[in-house]
Structures are given as structure tokens and as C-alpha cells.
Length: 164
Image 1 (tube, rainbow, N blue to C red):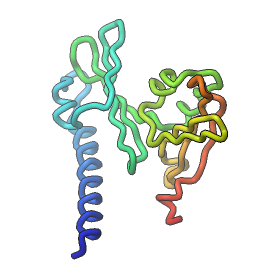
Image 2 (image 1 turned 60 degrees about the vertical axis):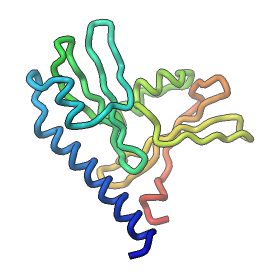
Image 3 (image 1 turned 90 degrees about the horizontal axis):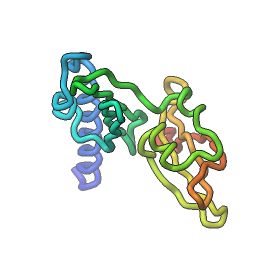
């Protein structure tokens, strides 16, 4: 087996393990019973923790760069698991509006899959890989001006997952 083949096999195994962890977490975590420690044990260290004034916490688990979901887990003020949802859905994409800040978008969608500067266009594009129609993997993009505010949004094909 070549080094490239070994590396590819390792990447595939890691991706499958992460997906497996998510399935186990969704099955084992019980609303109102499981704790924040249970979530971290099953899902790992969150990418971001959002603390609310009312004592709730939101833990973000992006599955990028190859995954197409970002889970946000809610922990109540009592330290108990309240549920999880995928942030990368059309309903949330429609909430992105011109003028929003980077922080606004980050809090709405979580960590982007990639950030690409376009110096000649004087913008930076943040992209999130997501499942567009139940099977096609696409990119949702926001275009930021130099002040870090949303200028516009766009969708594009994810050529890495389409064989092109």
C-alpha cells in the first residue's frame, strides 16, 4: 500500500469515526437527563461555547471541512442537555442579511468551512458546506466587505464532492 493510500484510508476512517460518534451521541444523549460532561464525552471538545445571560450554554460542533453539518447543543442552566440541531439549513441561511457583522453570522451558522480572501474584489468569502436538497452537497457563501459586514450571499456547487 502506498503512503498516499494509507493517508487516504486514515482520513476515511477518521471521518467515519466522527460520523459514528455523532450517531452514538444522538442516540445516547437524553434530554433533561444527560449532562454537559456527557455531551463532551460523546462528542468531544466543542469548537465554540456560547454562554447566555440566563445560564444556558450552546456548544458548537462543526463537522467541516469534509462534513456538511454543524451541531449546536443546548445545555440548560441546570447543566442538563436540552437537545441539538444542525445549524446549516435553509431556514438559518435565509436569516443572513446585508449589514450583519462577522460575529452575527458566526453566532447564526457557526464556524465556516473555509474563508477565502479576494483582494481584487475587496472582499472575503466565508463558505459553509451543507446538504442542499437532501443529497447534493453545496456551499453557502457570504461575501464580507473590508469592515467585516455582509455584502451579499450566494450558493455554489461543492466541486470537491461532485467529482469535479
